[in-house]
Every structure is written in C-alpha cells, then in structure tokens.
Image (cartoon, rainbow over all chains, first blue to last red; front, side, top):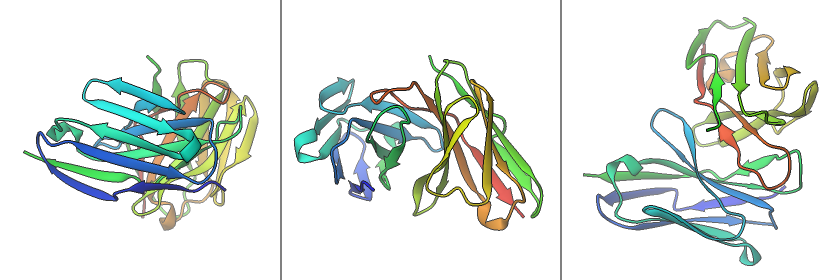
Length: 110
Length: 113
C-alpha cells in the first residue's frame, strides 16, 4: 500500500517562530488532508489540498502532487498551535479509505 | 457545520465484556470509518462502511465487528474485550467520492482492565 512519511517527528518552537512540516507519499493520490489533533484528542480539519496552495490565517499548505509531497506552514506560532499534525492521503474513489502518516508533534513554548 | 458525535469520551471495561462504541453523524454522509490510535502507531483503520448495511475490513479488523443499520449511525463492537484493545477510538465520516473532506468525532478513550 501507499506509504506516508512525515517530518520532523517532533518540533519545539518558541512562540512567534515559523515552522514547516512535511508529508511525503509514495504514490499518486487524489485526496490529501492536514489535521491538527488537539490535547483532548480531537482531530480538526486544517486543509483539504490534493494539489496547489491554500491559506487560512497563519496557516498555509502546498501540495506538489507530481513530486509527491505536501508542506504545512505555520507562521507566528502560538501555544494553542501545540499538538500533533497529521497528513492523510487517499487513493481511489468512493470508499475513501485514508492512510495516515505518523504525525509531527509540535510544542510551542511561551 | 458537520457534526460527528461518539457515545462516550471515556470508557472503562473488564476483560471479556462486550463493548459497543457508537458514532453518529448529522450530514448524510455515505462513508463512515472507525480508527484506533495508539502511541507510536498512528491512526489505523479498523473498519469502514460506504453504505447502510455495507462494511469492509480495514487494516486491523481482528477482534472487532461493526454494524450500520442506519445511514447516520456506525457502531463498533468488541465482542470480548481484551487488554490489548485499550486505545483511543476515533470515528469519522465523509461524503462518497474521491475528493471529499473527512470529519472526525471527539474520540473515545477505552481502558480494558
């Protein structure tokens, strides 16, 4: 099956710093999502981004489908950005079965 | 907004008990999923359903079964709970089709003693 690798596995930042999280995948995909898992365990949708670039406030994401990677940018990080960031990809249609990366654990210190 | 709810946030059960985890979504989504999340292992798909009464095994179906009698409800059943099923269980739903967003419930932390 498809392999999804996220890097770095752990990241510690001071508040206000910028960061880039990476997601590499081993085959072509037709769906890619970025999620943030908060300290209570809830996964929150950040971006649906199978290709191209999107921005939402301090967060933006870029997927280069032909080169099989996606990047999540966090600017001016805040302590509330702490948590685990997951990339999930999907191949095929209808059934919608996703493969998740292992996540990047982000800690933002005040 | 899409809302996916799970019947319990925390659950403690004894080995051998039958356990039901319920998931309900309110957006008429065709596809529903059950995952478990364990430290160091990420999210792993247990079962998914793409229609009422339809189900398919995911990556780790052993020890679990599912039921989908109504479109909005997807139940995960542990026939005889074991300690290695202590985990965080996450339900998700999405519309059918290859380009749709997946939405997650808040999760159920299950402890099997």
